[in-house]
Amino acid sequence: MALESHKTNPALNMERAFSDNIQNALSLMYLAKMGQKGNHKKERYGLPAFNVTTVSSINAAFTAFEMLGSSGLLAFSNSALKHFGQGDPIYGLEFVSEYIARLAKKTKIKVATHLDHGDYISDKGRRVVQAAVQMLSSVMADNSTDHLAKASTAIEDNIGLTREVVNMAHPLGVSVEGELGVLAGEEDEDTKSEFSTYTNPDELEKFLKETGVLMLAPTIGTMHGPNKGKPGHKVKLNIELAHKLLAIANKIDERICFVIHGASTLYPEIVSYATDILKKNDLNKSLNNNSLEKWQNFVGTDWEQVKELLKTGFVKINTDTENRQTFLASLLGAISKDAAKIDIRYYDTACAEALTQSYLKKLIMAGNYGVWYEPKIDITKFCFDLSKNLKTAIGTN
Ligand code: G3H
Ligand code: 13P
Ligand code: ZN
Image: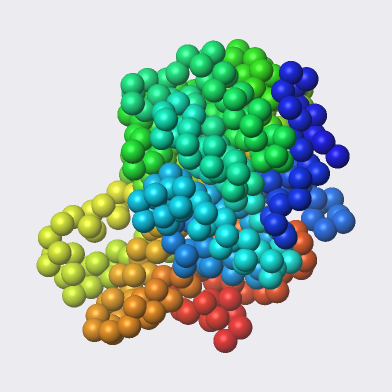
């Protein structure tokens, strides 16, 4: 079967066989949008895209997917790929694609591998996108902002560049995510937008039809990073605009799936875990670097609004910051329990188990469990608590 996109663009090749249990992101997203789990049609669910940056975080995500029988989506930013590739993102791509193919062979869940915020504007960005099309199952063609010029790109340029990526990727069965509008906050260590613009609904139809993308990141008021708004205030997303945009896309092709960037929520249990440690023994005072204040000022995206968007047909929720926060909180916890343990594996395991908890939490919140088989754990017994090891947190100890 080939999903037909706009007639002037190549259809997404759904016959392409990736390595065992790897699929393109769109196929997993579309199941979620339809509420398909096994052979049953249930409620819609969301597909968290976890930005992974280390081998331990990839392993932790697989552990969570397998415990829950979830669809898995692993996203790689340019800087994550550089980190994996010791400075060379292409080597990073080779490493992660081979590593994930090995893990996926042993599993019964399905996974997509996605290049996050790949730009097709700069030479450096183009090289990474071209390599990612060969090695991953999905790519983002983020051409809505020219980060060097610190300006939004003209719609015609965004369309032209995104279309080039679709022409290259769709015949290979690699799904493509386009972006329309400018998202605020840091997207990548090299790219930061101090301004933002909402997606213009008048441009959407043209963008979708002329690029042929089946995944779209509209900008509706979310932003990247740990400071998404004023402490104590909820960030208000433009839900009315979100619905309007989705209606336009559904009319063109109901298989088009929407993505929310900057979807990290802030877990209060993680904030109190970290701030309690910082307050204990006056650690914060001796560090003398405002860490406590920074933790207290973190603001995430409001989950209730994200949940409403998932119900109406948004699907992919990009989450990085909340997992970084969980990692950091668990590292503080591991060090405060024993700061003289001369074994890297002690700290690495503590952080990986905490990441698995963080991933489990979001997959359950999004309803992404029991997709490929019934969960192996009793999800009602799962308690997100970094003071516990993983077995205890999932209620099997
Ligand atoms: O939006 C993307 C991520 O948060 C990527 O962040 O470039 O620091 O890996 P990073
Ligand atoms: P957060 O910063 O909210 O985790 O968003 C991550 C993201 O959008 C990655 O593309
Ligand atoms: Zn993003």
